[in-house]
Image (cartoon, rainbow over all chains, first blue to last red; front, side, top):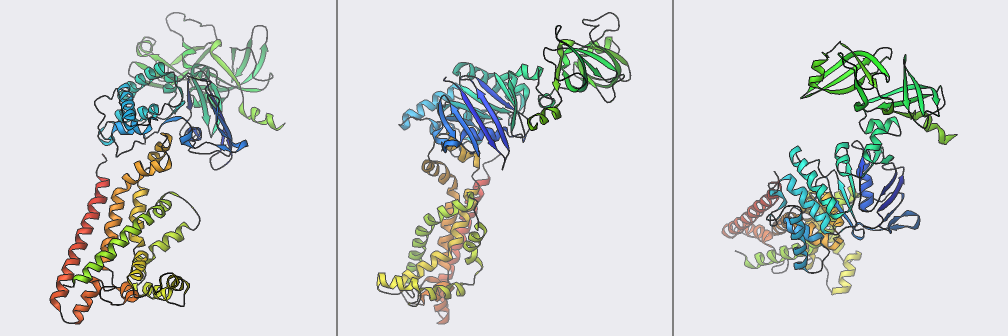
Length: 377
Length: 222
């Protein structure tokens, strides 16, 4: 299992990079970000397919890259298992030979025997002699995973490995990947643009944007407490707003923010700035509580906000609601309620609704422009 | 039927293919995957024999092979006779004018191998040699066969350059294409007709084979 992976890369061109990664041994790290954010570039740097201008990689205490000492190991000399987005299977070799090529044994018989075991492990027993072109998308992905593992790598690198298959296959592959992960305890770096996929498979996520790593942590922590509004946007936080910090009560760990004409109370140990300064804040949709019309709801006295329903979208058994709060121009609070709750409360476009924004769920962040000016001072 | 001429043509085509294809492989591979300055210039130089009049190419080769130019001098010093009007001379000429027929199909074949397949080979621990042997060459095989067939057939039929550089010496430089011309000049229509029909058949078979091979590369997907 070893000590895991530590790496940093910096360059200004051709692709700007300012990345720092850490993945403890045996854990899975997901690089999350929109397409074109530089996730794949970082993965290719780890594999040695790209050499950044400056950087270092230490994998299980072995140095793979150290630009300061002109050390650049070739991909063959780094023990990586790489699953490419299009799998990169050798089209003229059978599934078995695809895997056997990567197995580091000496004799052909031993290589093929190991390859057979790996194929069985990814549920492909019986398909050893098939060429990649006659396999389904899911089967090709499994061959690619078996080939990557067949190399007995120190680290497994997965580049959007689930993006080329249909939804049903993807869910099955998620389950299989989770099983493999539990059984092998392999240090893994997964690139994905899908936060749900990252939450499902990764122990930690690192948010990447424009080649820059912005925040790392457990998936739930990053989503609940994004460091900046950009991170919040990248991890799909829907309720993201700007307000002004009015005052901070250190003993009760309470901050009060002005949001248009509304004052909100937030629980925080550290204020995002001095009173009077602007701050970004967000709240997860699950911490927005709809008031029932017939009887009081839980937490009803906490930050009640009234507004008009201006978005109403039914998605199966759920309804996506957007409320424009009175006194706060151009803001929309979004929440999801079940269809029967919406029916019972006679919700609909143009209706008035009241919600509570739970104080413990409000997360305050310094405004980014302020953050950016700090290093120049 | 001029059997010695046909035999000489086959010998020339075989030697040209055997020397040119291995030599063209590394060049085609570099042109397919590397980006460097003057790449366009090198590609144009390789393609030049396609458009250059054979007599022009033949003229320059004849000048270069002469005892006043350094390549000619060097060859004479090494082998004791000039390159011009010899089998070796038409072989060198044949290697040059067949360059595009060998390099271009190979270059297309290497370009068709996805980068991820080669990168997957490196990340699977395959050395550059093993990647070449196990992955690149098998995948480029249709292109190699195309290059072989085109070079072979084109050498059989080449007339202008061979006549300029080699003249018309029976058993040394008189190829089947020159023999056809010779027979027509001598009003021997029967021999000219037979040899022409043979070259037509060989050319048609070659093109058919090239089409079949390049077509097969597209078909498997889907």
